[in-house]
Amino acid sequence: MKALDGIGFTLSPADRLTALIGPDGAGKSTLLTALCGLLTPDAGELSVLGMTPDPNDAAFALSVAFMPQRFGLYTELSCMENLLFFGRMKGVPGGEIKTLAREMLSATGLALFEARPAGKLSGGMKQKLSLAVALLTAPRLLILDEPTVGVDPLSRRELWATIRRMMAEHDMRSIFSTAYLEEAERADRVLLMEAGKLEMNATPAEALADMRGRTFLQKFVIIDEAQNLSPKQMKTLITRAGPGTKIVCLGNIAQIDTPYLTEGSSGLTYVVERFAGWPHAATITLARGERSRLAEFAAEAL
Image (cartoon, rainbow, N blue to C red; front, top):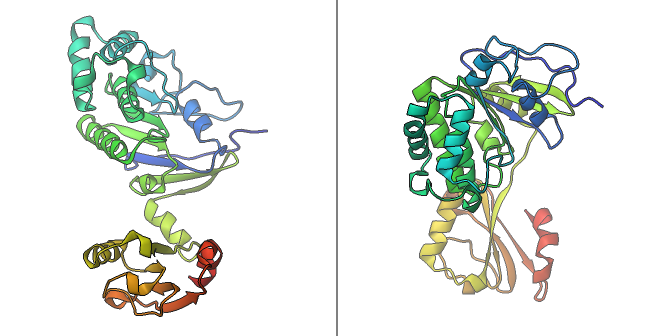
């Protein structure tokens, strides 16, 4: 069984941020590990920044930084102690290392937590600390293996803001794997892998154009009379839902006091929104006692 099967691609200087996507087991982590020189391919050649990947080559090791998916720092050491330790391992001069470590903690929003043990950090903060360690030597290429997996949305935004800022300040490039397509959409290039093969090499715009007409999206919001939403809350909800969203009311429409939904009969009722001239409209009434059948009816009715 081949983890990587005949993959070949070249990234141009314009591809500063490259996203690697694909299902679990596609070979994404294997490819990134090989790019770091931690795995040697059985056949073929690898060239990263014009060098053969080799972690024992000082020039390569200082030019490429790798942030693995799993937290790999010492949990018993504090944030500062981890940075000092790995800074020494990377050859940062002793007189500069503490100043550089403080700069990295500040850049990643961890300045107030330098004395906290790494094992006591939240998931998002652990990822920020891993990023700080990876950026200690200002690498030319930053390799990230699903850096935001299991991280809350706010921490995800903060992590990417830090990465983009550091890329701009240090003329750095990055290749990352992700399970979030909205992250891949912001990259300069997207690589899609499946079963060890490279199935697509395109810009996000090219990838979206290729998928147009082959994917379908339905958005709907289910509102129950028991939520007791006010007319103002209902209007806000409908407005934020966005065009094309189907608003479904479950319960007695008379008890959902709002002028923003179509009128319907009493009883258990689905009411599909006509607000702001949206092109869909329908009302489907269920007999009383059938509320538990919501899941069965939703796909067919909508």
